Length: 277
Image: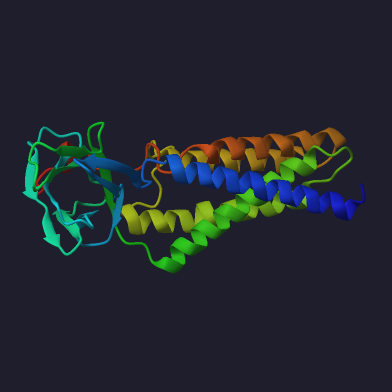
């Protein structure tokens, strides 16, 4: 195969791998919206429960009810506390039912669930989510441009990393240029804009090793170290291309771990002096 065609094919494969990993992360992460349907009597209600809230406002839980036949309540309490459940009625506005969860300090989490009942048949009711409750994490508001730079550079870093790994599989290839680009993009997205996003979100620049256990920070750190090793050890011999492949594989595995897993979480017991819900 001609070099130009081979390069184009490798880029296509790299894009597919990167998009597949991004979609997987989007669907399984702990801050991804919880979506589903519930049936109350003869009415099917789709729902979207948020698991992340940014900004200074209370979080509004919203349920759409086009038939305007339902009523219900929201229950909530601070996560990992001995708080009693708080209950509040859902308020109707046209085709929607809603209630608010009081805003929490950055990193604070709240468990919540919604119970719906049919106005005409009180015996018909449903709780969402059906397996217990949903957990939402509160954070500060991140400027859109900062967040966009973070996401774009991380995505491009993943893309170039996958492309480098594929290049390393080609005999007599030289992945060094791709490796340097991968390394620089990951550093820009993760070590420059990542801490800025973290600061706006939770008031801390870094919560990974050695300061904490944040898996998002730690998986980035592991990936960057893998690329440093590859760039240092992969300068001379033909066999050095396997260092680049190893760094790309480590990065792929690290970034396939759902985003925000073991992320920043407020310890209410240590925080103290916080107002009740």
